[in-house]
Image 1 (tube, helix red, strand yellow):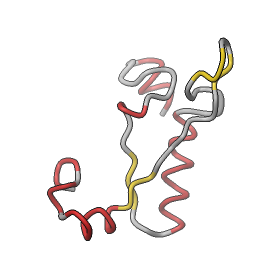
Image 2 (tube, one colour):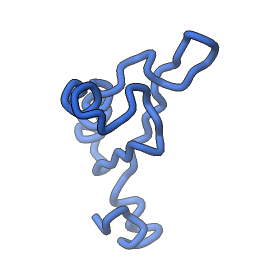
Image 3 (tube, one colour):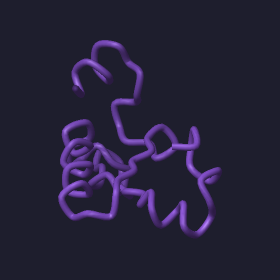
Length: 82
């Protein structure tokens, strides 16, 4: 997937940028772990923000919980109204 979306088609940056990626999941450990695993394939360690010249950190992935957002803010708070 990284090869297709980042390297070949250049739809996302080579290094992780939070403004380009939105990750959401249900509030189940299995689905959260799946979402994190999927995006670690896109952005492995050392593709995160620069911590000093030539050294990048692990990307700081945040998985959004659909049920919590909808309960607190309503369905309209979700991108594309889920």
